[in-house]
Image (cartoon, rainbow, N blue to C red; front, side, top):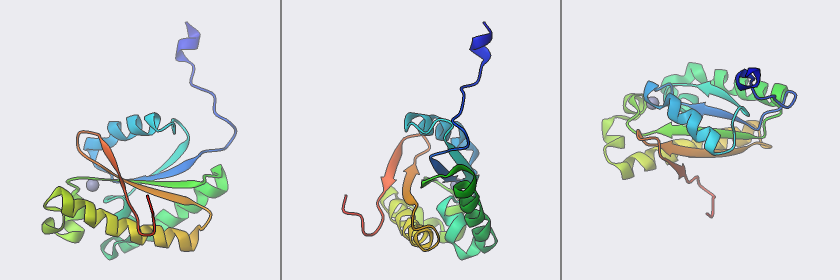
Length: 155
Ligand SMILES: [Zn+2]
C-alpha cells in the first residue's frame, strides 16, 4: 500500500516551462488540470501575478516586472526551462483595473485586449530571453482554454 502514497520521481533539476498566470482563485484547480492535460505535469515553475501577462508588462504594475523577469531567469538557470507559458483568463479583475471594463466588455474585445498585451510580453521576452518560446492562452471561467495568437504568427 505504501506505493499508493509515493510521489512520482522527478528527473534531476529539469523542467519544461515557466508558467505565468493570474492569481484568481476561481482558476487554480483548472490551471493544474490543464497543465497536466498539456503533458506539463510537475514540469513547470509557476509565477503568479495578478492579471497574468498584464502583471508583467502593464505600467500600472511596473514594480512586478523585474520580479517576473528575475523568476524567468532563475527558472532557466535552475531548471533549464525552454518555454514561457502564459495563461490569462476571462473576466479578470486586474484587466478591468488596468484596461477599463469597456476593454473586455465582450469576448471579442477581451481576446483582442489580451492579444495586444501578449504581443508586448512576447516582444519583451524575446529581448531578454530569445532562446525561450512563449505561448499565450486565454482561459474561460469554465476551465476551457484558447490560444492567444501573437503578432508574426502564421498559424
Ligand atoms: Zn485575473
